[in-house]
Length: 168
Image (cartoon, rainbow, N blue to C red):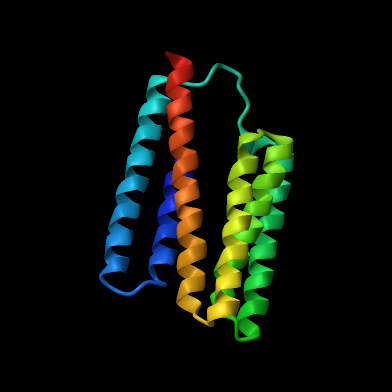
């Protein structure tokens, strides 16, 4: 569910860097994919409930510390980038911080998070590099956010498929 919701958010952000009608098409496709992932997740949870006593990632203190650090880093970087007249680089900054958060999750909780983290870090680097080369803020946002959205959707879809396969 989280991948579907955040995938839609990244899609909407990425579409803001595109011209119409491409932006509209990207928004619609992202919303359809995100809604599909959320609906599939709801069905999976109803069909394959967790085992009794299985702990939630959200209840782990390390998870909460990492998320708080992530939020603080995102906010601080956004403030600095906006204050220095570089708002187009807020998107790669957020992708970088979220990518690092997934890399850390990959070391602590589940190795599958590491691939997602690596893709997000790569998206941040690529978006930044394209911005520095072209000077086009739209390319920075579209590249970074749409790669991030695709990674979120792919990760969520992979999780749904592997959950269904494991339960068969």
